Length: 284
Figure 1: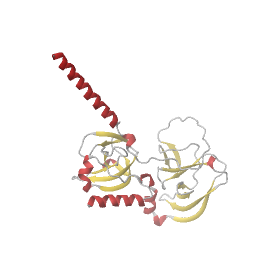
Figure 2: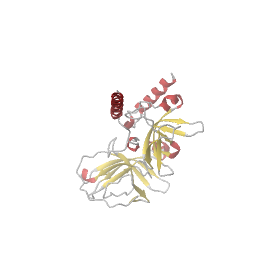
Figure 3: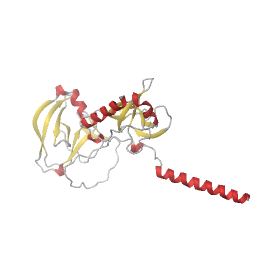
């Protein structure tokens, strides 16, 4: 009965969540450890950011195994479906595999940080958010307007290419926030997909930023400067850039395909049978 309630609650939370990227993750893992400890596992439904002391975080087949099945570089956002706390108080997280449900994908959450979202920021600073009716106007300058997940964040939520809008186009700014340093931020909202925060007086960048760039004292700078080839920017409709879905799959070791394993097994049986037959006839 408890298992049924836990799965039902998890499904209801996911259906009611605005994080539609993970709406399909309502299936529980089926690895041996999870099945054995399902009663002690709690639904999480949360992004965590890898922050291991060694610069990466290992993925294990279970919290009690030394088998390493993957390696996640620091700064990677990983979606955690369920958590399990050991008797010594160590919290582990698991992501439901999209294909092989029996594959254990467990991570020690002491080497992660909870990823703060724009929704988290708004809940924490609701009293400091000032409703406004202003607009941001695009001028003649070409470039990208970077929309941040929340004031002071290094997470890029969206970017708008000025080539995709007409000069003089305006975008509503619906909220205002002033941080502890006195920096003013505005919330821009094109639609439910394209939105985010900008600084007062924020200028366009000549190149599209990514999460290897950071905002430092009001200026943009690459974390690791590398020469970038000049690539013409295609004129495309105004859309939200794709973002990671928090999947751990890209960081797992290559798993042998089941069909390949079956094929190898059959080939082994055939070879062994042939060897036995040859030896039998030689003795005769």
